Image (tube, rainbow, N blue to C red; front, side, top):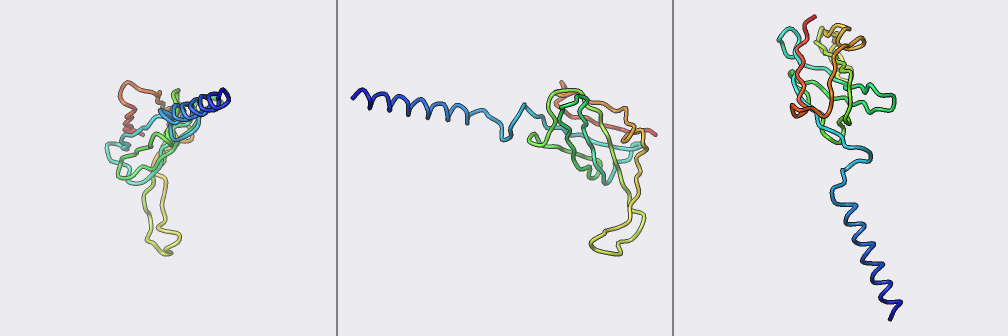
Length: 140
């Protein structure tokens, strides 16, 4: 009887531990991540197609990227950055040629100056009091 009680208690404890671990845990390993979204314009005009990267200022930090479409970007929580300071790098493209090859797509050129990507001084801090919405109006 005592052995049965011990196994029952152990089974209940294990079930409770698994339930507690499953509740409230994120769908990804590691620290809390945050969704980020916003708009990106250059001289007030939406960047039609591009990419935004939140590059961690910390050596072991997490960087996150997302697509810019029609001036808007959104990075979901599971791909988002963790709390901290970030350098923001923005790339934007415009088509300069016709589609000649379906696999290659149209020829494009970079429209965002280097001071907003490779040499960016743009920053963001997460989590933010503004709900993690960051708008960037680039003025070259």
